[in-house]
Length: 336
Image 1 (tube, rainbow, N blue to C red):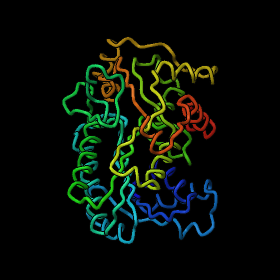
Image 2 (image 1 turned 90 degrees about the vertical axis):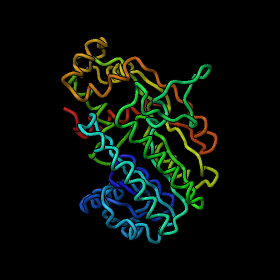
Image 3 (image 1 turned 120 degrees about the vertical axis):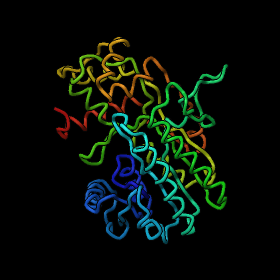
Image 4 (image 1 turned 45 degrees about the vertical axis):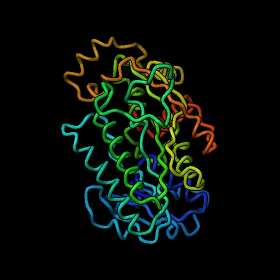
């Protein structure tokens, strides 16, 4: 699998090992392999022969070197590697190029190696950046984000283009069976102190850095469920050819703040709602804020029924995912 040191990827590796799979995980630098191994030693059900069941290779999404060798002998590819920035990049190609080219590099090497089963980590950002048709109340897996949507961001465009590139690729090579997992905001307990971009949302709220919360919300899902979706997709041939939304429910940021404040009343967690005009003014000077402006006041209703029906998912409650995120961040002293 690619991107082995990521927040989601470590949980996928853990669940694969616990299910008896052997894993070859890619990292950008060899030192990250030791980091992953330490996390598996700490959390795996069985650490017997772990160094033979989990091995590492060094790959870069922007470079051709090593991909053919990495896929040689593999029976399946799980492609999780893709950039996920906190703030919009100065150049959209900084997101687009590794997302799209990296996906095609992975698929090309897999096809050359005779790998026929592929699980791709996409995002709900490739689904909901469009207007729902009249009479529809929720987005589902038939929806695709539109590049010219007012809600579109460089990140959503990169995820949409990368996923479409994957589906186009397997249409050319029908022997390859693709499933995509489309997570919403992924929270929950990390396996080590290397927290990803998504957890920084909770960390920022816990730190009391902001005097108010913006009028935005996001669909939330637990990382353990997203990892399980990857593993079940791999185990269930009937999931091939499908996309699956990974989301428990939509929550407004103010409701998340109120939940955290109730859990940690002594922390200076702001629950006041920032006026939209203030956010737009601040966005002129702060790239992170500018990146969320299209989402002001926008609810994102998602239909997760396909994941329940085909993958048998019973999602951990979003509130619980938020609580476990906060508990870990505080316990490990990752927030002031």
